[in-house]
Amino acid sequence: MSAPTATPADRGTPQQRRPRQNSEVWSWFFMRISGLVLVFLALVHFSITHILNDVTDTDARFVAERWDNPLWRLFDGALLVLALLHGLNGLRWIIDDYVRSPVKRAATKAVLYSVSFALLAYGTLTIVTFSS
Amino acid sequence: MSAGRGSVYRGRSGQWAFVTHRITGFLVFFFLLLHIIDVSLVSRPDLYDEVHELYGNVVLRLFEVGLLFGLVFHSLNGLRIVMVDFFPGGIRNEKRALSTVLFITIVFTLVGGYVIMKPFIDGRIL
Image (cartoon, rainbow over the protein chains, first blue to last red):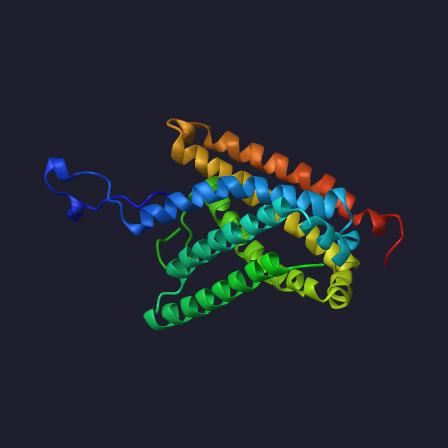
């Protein structure tokens, strides 16, 4: 869970010896930044829907009233996108760690990416197009 | 302990934090997938309400308490990881931070869990 570091083979001349800016570094960085935002978004969301209101009160009318305000749509949209991408990347790491066979790994990832992006599109469509 | 198959890396508390972080992240992710589908039913309010009513029964309320535990642990332990990675010297406070993470997680789960289970405790639902 720490940043990927350069292996001895990556060593060049002293001028070249800078941290490598490959995609895994961005993936590592994204997890920390999105995670910090999600701590706020996810805990506020859970508090509103399970603590301040009973779960049975959050019916379709509750959602409609909330989504009358575009700022709540933005809040829920940000939560949807960040949580899904954060989870997708986490699952990608888990698959890389535990699914060793290249064929099974590719197949598992294909399912993960398909389901995640389909639901990302479906959820975004719901938030954007909803009208009561 | 041999280094062969079936042995575990003996990273002590940090290793258990790592494993718990993965498991809670994995479970919260799958709940998110389910949650996107149930919320998307909102364009058909009657169907949404019918499905949503399930979340009020006692089994799913227990599940929601589990979700609260997972969310709070993953959030706070994530902050601990950020502390270790971004702040020089943060690693020295890593164990104390983990104790704090566990303490707050347990308190939030108990208090939040009580609120979530209250309709059941009061005998208003089965």
